[in-house]
Image (cartoon, rainbow, N blue to C red; front, top):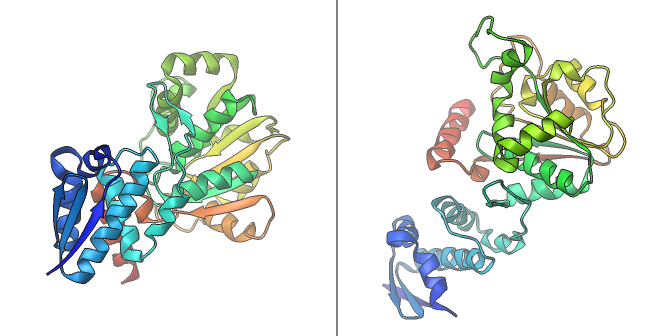
Length: 317
């Protein structure tokens, strides 16, 4: 058996590392088949040499997050373990603890993975950004957070959120109510993100003033959008013609973020996805950036990662 010791600067680090009911340490022990014992400000890791080395690297990666003020959760512990498996846990130092914005409940919004950090940096540094990846990677939520941050900083006068009104594989028929009631079900995820950032009261006030607009993609035709932060969600369900129409709405002092998952296209058979086309067409244009997410960037339940991996494996077969 091989043993390695890790020393702590402060006991608070050990408390954060172990987590509630030692859940974080148990995850590491199960992953690498090692035993981890705490002796004051020291941690002893015993097991097979290679496994102990991996466990120590994982613990040091988690300590990097703790020292940056991050609270450990099952999600970021598993994320660090996946980086150790790749041999790239040293990249954790590049993840800053900078807050994008504060939600209406006082919760800071920060990137939780390296993919999310790259996405945030791309939005800061480019006029048009495409965020492409599976469900649960924070594409829409982080884009809305960046939009709210720009609006609060008075960098833009309006936030415009839109998505195509395409049903996900089922026909909903004629919905009751006025026009707003008919399109609300399609736009619900955008409302949810805005409510979380601003609170329902502030959202309603800004919407009445015209500072926030949530509308179907069809409403964008013929407009020029100046001084705006514009987000197109579920862009995999646009046609090439719709995508071209949307991107050419860009006005002065505006940003566009386009998000979508090209593995979940709900267009009728035979119709091409505008998102798939535009990534190829604009890949070499300056001030336009595409950020690709993978299952490691999923920040929902652990099973979401497993489901995505299983579907990817099945599609390869």
